[in-house]
Structures are given as structure tokens and as C-alpha cells.
Length: 333
Image (tube, rainbow, N blue to C red):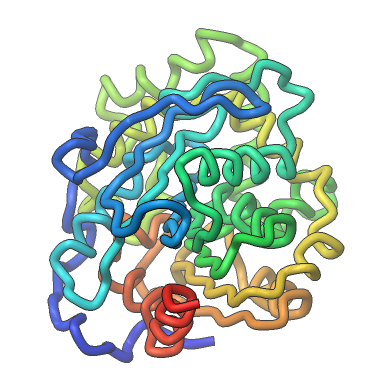
């Protein structure tokens, strides 16, 4: 395990804590918007900044977490554009089913961790890529690991506060494992109740936001909540979808992580905050036990949204000298 203190060449900019608002302007970022058919139904995808034609390029796939959408990656893209050592090109950023501009799967029972990963691979291939590196946040990290376990085109996995073994245990044993991740278990209970309330439950977060009460409610998710841009809080209000959240948790609880992730043969680099209420040291230990090439970076003063709170430090961890060598090798192969 390491901390984000070593600065590779080209990372001398200090942008501070939560330096960017979330953006909804995909065109300004050089991205197009498409709806791509998959086995789970149509998925809305932002993509672009292409550097190669045909199948010679390697895509960078960014997968958001629960209660998120493609916009949660815009601070990382903005930071990368200001740092010469951290290019983000050949981007594919889907709104996963049930979030952002993508509806839930046509058949909810068919939507599993495995089918979500398969849909991501379908999207990449539909856009002309046969290889990709994938970076996932929270639930997106969970899906990224399954993609690496099941799809031979995956060359690298970056995890940003990926919810893994601790969440699986909490979903399966909410009472006996409550102390493992009490923040997640409590949130899941609330989301399940709100899911049963239908539209009224979904509107609660938006109502709290309108009253100015949502920021203190989400404070445990961040290292320093009063410094978080208002657009981030607004996005959480918009994406607080109890039914989608409860379904995602149920899928995670049914997933055989040990058997699946033991098949991963590409490098995996993980980072999370030292104040992350959804990820703990036991997750790091257990991931290292099943994945052969695995390293962890812990970001100080950071909660569950490292790519939003500290995008430069996130890029440092993902673009370490060792990673850059792997990146270039993948480009040249």
C-alpha cells in the first residue's frame, strides 16, 4: 500500500480539493453522445477524443458508481487536460442501466454484474475497439473487475473507491456484518424503504436538496463536505434512485467474487480515501489475496469520491511510472 506523495513528471500542478464542478456539456469535452443497443437494452454513451481508426486503438472506459452518471468523471477529464502526463483519450463513458440517461434493463432479472460487464464490452466493440483499459468508481469498480475477469480485451483496471468484499458481506449478512460497513448498510436499508415508496421515495433527495438539507446528509461520503462544489450535491440529488440502488446491491450480494476475480490476469491499481465509509483495509487485503498484480494507494483527507475530491492525486495513482510503462506497452502491442 502507498500514499499519493510521489509525483511523476508532468504532475506539478496543485489544483486543490474538489477543484471542478461537474459538467453536462459533453461537446466542450470533445465527446459525442450515442445510444447503443445491448442485450440489456439501449445504453446512452458519451465517447470520443479518438486517436486511432479501426481496431488499432485502446479505449479508456470510465464506469460511474451507484447514484452517479457519466458527469461524475468530468472533474477527472478536466484535470487530465491540464496535466501533460495524464492524457485521457479514446474515451467511452456509459450511463449504466438505471442511471443517468439510461433506463433500467428491459428485463430487470437479466441485469446482473456479469451482464452489465458484457454490455460494456458490447458497447466498446460497437464503437470499434477490441482492447480497453477500464476505470471504475464504486459500483463501477465492481463491474470493471468482472469485465477484466470475463473479457479478454481488458488490459488494465483502475479502481476508485471500488465497493467490493465489504459490500458483498454487508448485503448478505446485514445484521451480523453491520459493523463492517455501517454507513453502507444503513444507506441500503433507507434505499430499500424508499424504493418501496415509489416516486415519493425517489423525490426525497431532490426535496432535501431544494431545502438545502442534502449537503449535511451526504457529509459522510466526502472528506470535507463544505468544500464540495454544489454541482456534486445536485448530482447526488438527481441520481438518488432507490430502486436502482437496491437492485445493484442485490446483484452484488449474489456475485461470486473470489472465483471470478481470481481469473483476472491484467494489472489492477486501486485507490480510495482514508475517510471512505464504503471501502476498508479488509477490502484491500482480500483483493490482494485473489488478484495477482494488485496495488493500492490511499488518498489522505478524502472520502468516497477521489476522482471528484482529488482528481490530480487520482491521476497520479493511475499514472504511476509503473502504470505508464504498462500503458505504453498496451499501445505498442
